[in-house]
Amino acid sequence: MTDTLVEVRDLKVHFPITKGVLFDRVVGHVKAVDGVDLKITKGQTYGLVGESGCGKSTLGRAILQLTPTTSGEVIYNGQDLAKLPAGRLRSMRRHLQMIFQDPMSSLDPRQNVESILVEGLQAHGIGANRDERRKIIGQTLDAVGLPGWALSRYPHEFSGGQRQRIGIARALVLGPELIVADEPVSALDVSIQAQVINLLDELQEELGLTYLVIAHDLAVVRHISDVVGVMYLGALVEEAPSDRLYREPLHPYTRALMSAVPVPDPEVEDRRERILLAGDLPSPANPPAGCRFHTRCPWAQPTRCATERPVLREIGASRVACHFAERIASGELRPHEVKVQLVRPEDEGETPGVVSAPTEPGSFV
Ligand SMILES: Nc1ncnc2c1ncn2[C@@H]1O[C@H](COP(=O)(O)OP(=O)(O)OP(=O)(O)O)[C@@H](O)[C@H]1O
Ligand code: SF4
Ligand SMILES: [Mg+2]
Image (cartoon, rainbow, N blue to C red; front, side, top):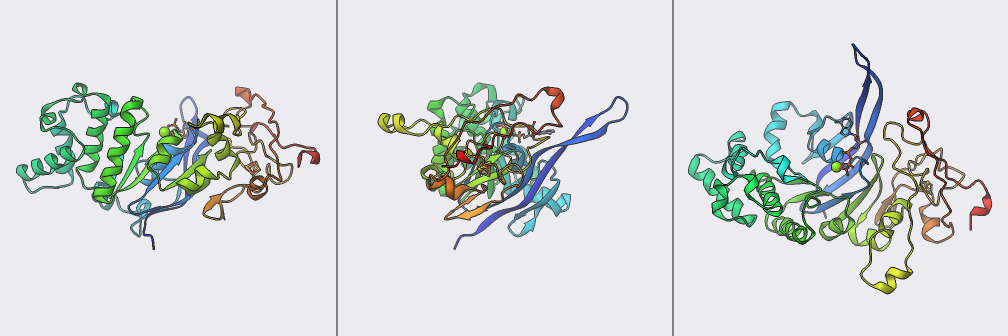
């Protein structure tokens, strides 16, 4: 039996696009998150991947209620965070923390480490007095592998990896349950990335933390995640236990992402399928109708793909949003060329992009 810590139901975050000289008028919406359902299990790591601009950070921030949601629910320990009164949400915040991509810009350069860490403790009334707070801070520094002398130093005096440890300490010092780590290692040297990932792993083991780890690097997510969700234009297209997703990706978009990850074995590397995605991510202000991936999908079909939005369906232990996943997996449907149609800026808002589905039934194999 697994315990769900967070359940996201049909979550939408739409940012208004405004125009006007004197008065702003809403002329459209950026559908950054557009109907996401997922569950994060207590003590586990949910990895979220997808191209730049697909809505990963917005989803992470919306789960923590750092970005207002347009609709849907975020159930945390049985309570809908979006409906909590501001005061209750504030006191809940210590349990819901975030680690950012760029520790330099997320840490105040004028505050030394002690002051960065004590700030949160004071704000949440943690620790009865100064000595108690110092003890908590000391234990936290120890947990993230920073020496005691770090307390009197300022962020610029540390290396990138150490600064990210300060960022982790700032989240950890409040005793959180859920940590959303948004690209926690992508600003770091490759040699340091593994250290920080291992630290997150160890802390999870020791403290029973639950993570949502956002990354564009599939290798990072694979190492640390129990379950991986793949996002495309504001929605999940596939979700599966980490091993299964990497062994047997079912959605064409996941297959394309996986095909770009190098394999250490040169023989396998030479033989494996490579899928180059044509064109850019369409605008989330004007997502394609039907399957949002149909404008770039090498398996898109003349029926359904351009008109019917696929829902996430269970296929074995995976959830997949593709009408034809089983027939693609069996090899019955073969990939075809995708024609890229350039969208002129003035067309944006009117043309959802390319229709790549083959018109000839002969394209079915
Ligand atoms: N505050 C905002 N106002 C308007 N649009 C926004 C806002 N925040 C994000 N967006 C838009 O929402 C979409 C999703 O952005 P988001 O930052 O969530 O993507 P991402 O997947 O995290 O990308 P990256 O990998 O580059 O960090 C983008 O088109 C972005 O421009
Ligand atoms: S539904 Fe159609 S366009 Fe979408 S991923 Fe599946 S085959 Fe491709
Ligand atoms: Mg982001």
